[in-house]
Image (tube, rainbow, N blue to C red; front, side, top):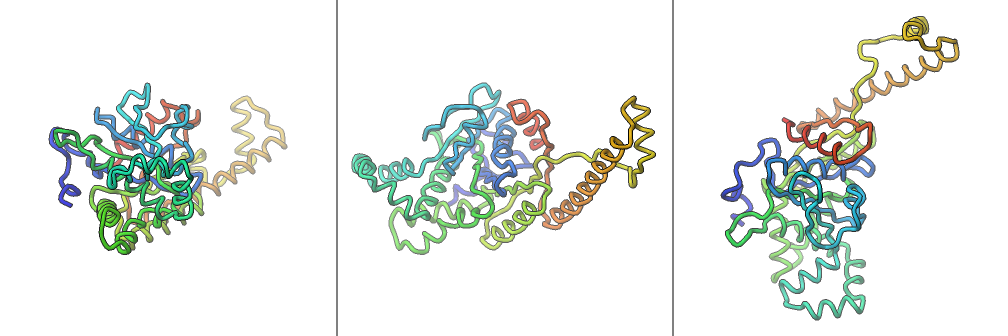
Length: 329
């Protein structure tokens, strides 16, 4: 297991001190933008000319949708026109099982025959634990893979992982399998993945919005991962919005009316009343967000805030988010 703690491979240079792990697991409640954050983190880690692998395992083809590509095959492909060396991989459990059977049991032809009979699909459907073992096993293989000279193939691997409600079971399945298996490849493979996920090579980053449910799930996931001895990295607040009325503790209709007149805008009663209502809603929302920031600070993990992208998520937006992540403390 020494290769789990050997630091950067020779010739690769020092790791980024802000993101010292080699396997970065990105999770969050559904809808918080964890795929976008995972992609931006992959861009950030690859910014120094070092190859990074961005992996998804949920079968959603979220990366293909994000980058407006055809559905990704079970193969590592370089992201075109990205300006950095980011490779994409959508891990398919059936293909991972065929690869596993060939690697450990030399059953390539037999495995393909089983697939035609539907046995592999049946096995990965009725045994979701097996499915997660295969998925995490492939991620581990990519993370620790070396070339003929013994150098790491990837500077880092970023995993767009299942949501926080399932992340503990997903990452802990190999530890449970290692306890059940007495010997053989399944036991050794499971032990290897479990060790990687509990080593300094791994960090689980929790993505949230400044909303009550995502923040609560972030806190719950942190407690669960800590109990499983799986290292947690940063809390990443996505889509943060700056306060528009900073310093305005109490607005009045008269103040709004004067401001509208000065700006040459309509200042009738209906407009002033509606604008005042929106301003109060915004201030209440900002106050709640400040409370939620306090709850996140209480988790005692580094917190990074990423802004809402007004023009949507495109390559330029991802590069902007990557710059912010790269400069994170």
